[in-house]
Image (cartoon, rainbow, N blue to C red; front, side, top):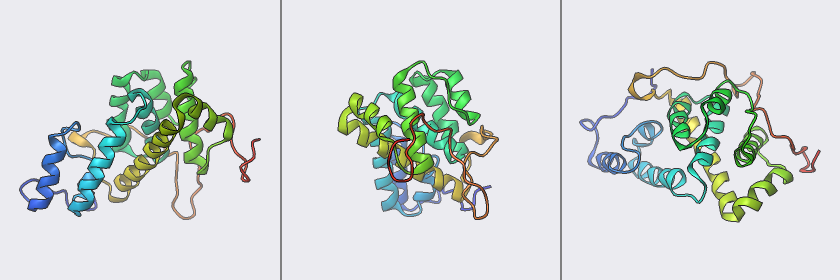
Length: 211
């Protein structure tokens, strides 16, 4: 049950409706997820949807790698709507159903594709520790250069914001769908353990040295 009322076109102000119309006429095609909350501040929602559209549809990274990073992020934060939407998008972009299912279960896939392996390791390290090891960083930078590395980091950060917004306001899944995630991976409430995704093979120690 959402913690805030869900606005409809009939209950929106003119400014809110302008954002709504911009979203539904764009590549998303519908207004769901965190924008349901952001819409309460229309100027925030307008910038949010532009930023999100650029990171999802306009980076130099192949769509399958962006969607893989988003899946890892959604799973880390146990964001049901995020994982639900992007599991379908990831499969459409070329991520195998087996990889998606393994991530859904909270485990590291046994990747045969080195690009996917490196993106997953980058995302899982960053989410678990707030840092990325030199080895994994170099793998991404050598392939995608500075622009791609900055974009990947931004995708992970943006979709962490998305996940937190979804979780904080308990926003509903689209179309009455059921949540696909049954076992929390990350719990950050006071007094609960914190555990992240299975991390990459070359993690940093706390002083940024390589283990």
